[in-house]
Length: 231
Image (cartoon, rainbow, N blue to C red; front, side):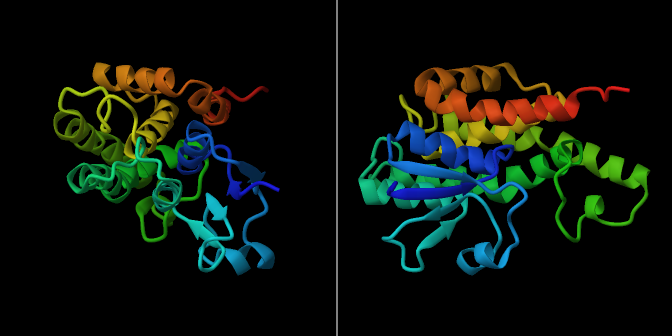
């Protein structure tokens, strides 16, 4: 039996983050695809948030842990994977800041811009999840797409600042989180700046199959939802 069991949804970039990480780190893991299987009593008993990715591991106080960044941080701390998550307080703070800025600021606008195309449910309280008309929803989606440029520039100018990766010469867990998120922008044919295209290519080159294999699941899903319907 694998040391780490991870419940996943293959089309999700949140899940892609951890899927890349465990492969790149060389950890012993088993993946369980729970597409269409969430929300059951059995799943909610171990994950009341009903979220993926979900890590199940004996060392955890409640036996399970969700949130992609928390999972990567935990596994790095447990297995002393300093190359992905530096122990120097200042360097670690930059990695943490890059991840939290993504999940708190950048990912919400990425989700609002891409989820309508990806056929993913949108968040309660937002225009896309309301009974607003098609024009209002399209306007909200366009506004979210336009808002992506600013956090992207923050990554270029501040977190990368001339480096290949946020982690320096090698990818950190913040790099894995950012690169995975950028994969969803293909769904809306977002014109990534040249540096971002080069960054994704550098990530895939550095991590090899650990990146490419799970990324193909996301890319395949994105291609499928963009493909014209066959009459």
